[in-house]
Structures are given as C-alpha cells and as structure tokens.
View (spheres, rainbow, N blue to C red):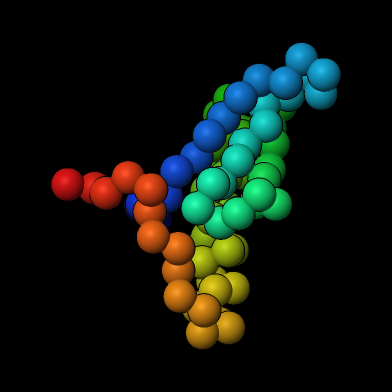
Length: 69
C-alpha cells in the first residue's frame, strides 16, 4: 500500500538500532528496527494500523506534510 505520509529514520547510537518517527501522527507515533530495511517495514505496518484505527473511530486522517504532486 502506498501511503502519502512522512517516515523519518535515524540511527540511534544509544539504542544501537534505527528509530522511526511518523510525524503526521504525533509525537508518540514511533517504531524501530535492527536494520534500515526492517525499520521501513515496521513503519509501513504502523502506518497501516494507525490509518485503520483513525478510520474505525471516524477520526479524520492527518494532512500529509508533503503533497504528492
């Protein structure tokens, strides 16, 4: 599924893993991965779950930070 939302991936020396933020969904929307590829996969899964949750609760989805023009 192609999702129009931002995924920010940063290496954490402290945690020794990639930390992922999903900024449109607020400060608590995070996941992580041992590898870059795993962190992307986890981010996509979390985004899908967040979208399902928003839709189930009738809550409007966040506006993407960058439009796909």
